[in-house]
Image (cartoon, rainbow, N blue to C red; front, side, top):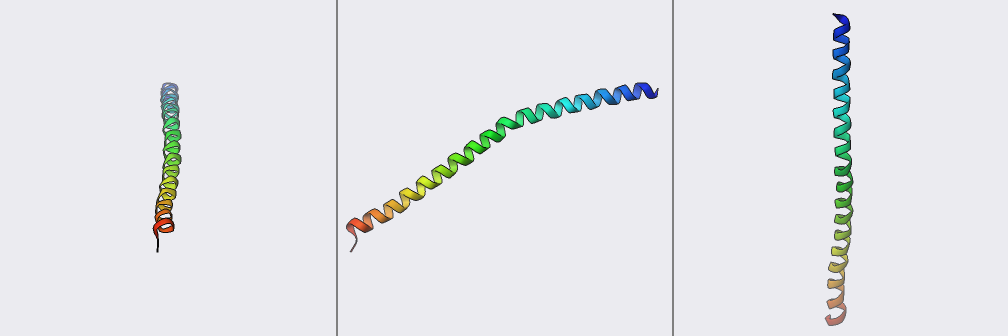
Length: 65
């Protein structure tokens, strides 16, 4: 009886481990995608700031009093 329980425990541990590996493998692309989104968001924020500052600096410099 203890031997059977041990093999059942080992098989369940292996299935849990394989499931964990599957989750990890599926989580890696999500993480890389999140990094890409964050990087593009930073880039967009920087360009938005530059456009905003350029818009404020341009007209004020050209048509200001």
